[in-house]
Length: 250
Image (cartoon, rainbow, N blue to C red; front, side):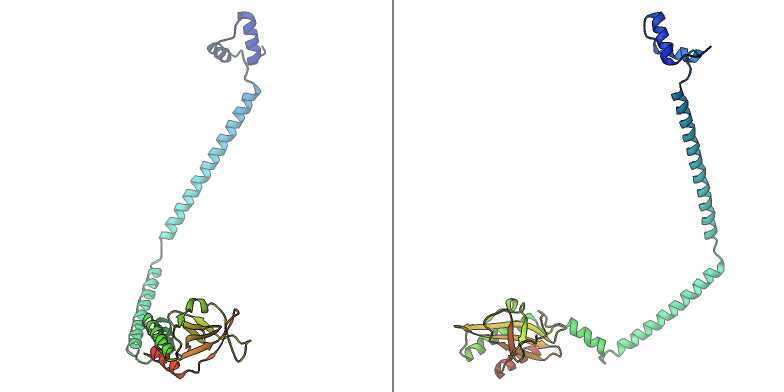
């Protein structure tokens, strides 16, 4: 006897009973074998079987990997005693070397009174050659010296002037190796610490107070009135040079 599909069985049930079958009646027809399982269900069963096989395969792989890791851990935990012995010897050697270095360091500290190149470099970078106190003394010098020269009213223009390039009057193509630094320390030949100027009608007196790389105070003079470059030379005023040198070398 050929088994009916679900749709065929429902159609015949409706023809005989004049209504649609209830769920329990449909289930009973399946259990009685009146309705055959469709191909779609066969496909579902095949897919479920394949999924189960895949899951089982993954599980077996994970278990195998875990067992290998456990074996490797046990193997690495078993370290020959000779390794510990070598480590102890290395530690002892390192300790001896460290003690020797400490003694050498103490010996070097004891002879620090003799300056070397490194010590001089550290002193150059850590010890400021220009301070707020020296800046205040320079401001007072510019007032007293300006009055002495009948040139009162010098103003500080460090921020504005230090941003423009500086060239020598003797050679307009040669740039002065100068850099502004508030503490007086830089790698340039001239370190600018302050700039003052005084205008009189269309003329100007401008002074760049610098410290050379070797620590020598050096005052540059510029009468430049326009353009984006300052042309300078060393000032010829002995009183200004002497007063500034006293401030720097104090």
